[in-house]
Amino acid sequence: EEEEEEEDLKRAAAHSRKLALQNRDFRSVENVAEIRESATRVKTWFRALGVELNENVLVSARDDDENEMDTFARALTKAATDGSLLKEIVESESNVRIPSSVFAASSSITEGVLKHLRTVPGVKPRFLWCQDEIETGVNVEATVGLFDDIRTCGRWR
Image: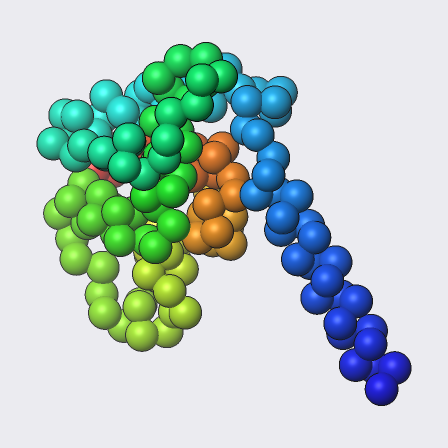
């Protein structure tokens, strides 16, 4: 019974941390300017690829969004949670289908794509272990940064 209570406490603490992360406003972090710059590059890149996020459907614009990149960054973070956008972009940019065996050994699309990206020379490793943050949509920096790192991968040029 003590072990069960201890597990309940651990679960409650983990849930509290998750809620705190979800409620964290990325605009309050130190490197918000860097996140906005990355978001600008990713949005321009997406337009060149013909990928348009319907930002107004994904997130409601906030009166306190300082610029359109805040809305785009939040919309991208929400759109990336299921992994399908990440998979589509990676496969499109690399002109390679990620092997189904990678997904068979993964718990989610995001995990499979991140596993694949870890094997691709030239992809920066900064956000390749941020599966939970990307899937739960709690970390704008990790999501925007991952797409920006994929954009800059020289292997696909």
